[in-house]
Image: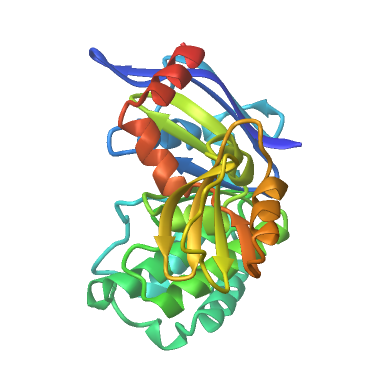
Length: 310
């Protein structure tokens, strides 16, 4: 079941096509990566999904029904990149106030806040003011406030900004736990290594258009270039093969590109026949960062995707 579907969504500002006919589906319980360079249309898309902006055309389907911003906002938790906390307000009072705005009773809100503050080691923060927090501490507070009312759809825009590795892992573990408990997370970031580690599926937008989507593994498979890394006990002095081309030599490892018509077993067979002991053999898939740059910089592949979408 898809918790969210977007059909042919459009949003224009004067002559700018901020979101230009984007469609996507997000399965319930998934961790979904929304990627794109600055100005790609990600924030505008998120603001339509959360009801902050109204689309000029298209439909948003939330939980199987057309999205109604007035009644359906309670199902969504949104952590924007530009934080929206009241700097002069005490942390505990602020969390309680915002939780009640999301429909929680005071007693339920207090119970959930204390549970989250204990989990995040924030119990001593209750009477601190937001302006006294570091960026990382403010990030933890914003995350807690976003998920307090147990929304079905959680949208996190750059959630790891300002966090040290320990607190990044803490937030990451909570994202996994929330997804396992049935929540769906839309995760927007520029840090491709985090997307690769965390997300099940991704969509890449550029200049208001969707230029690719799919699971992380399927996207990487689509852009692979038949590159393999081979670690050998000893690299032969001369390597002459019609099966592959040597791209790079690094100590005891070769990076090779298999030629058309041949298979990985043919590469292994070549070295076995040479009497060379093979330590490891692995396919070298491109990183999401490499794919991102390749598409966004307007290579022929990017133009091909854009033509398919138009």
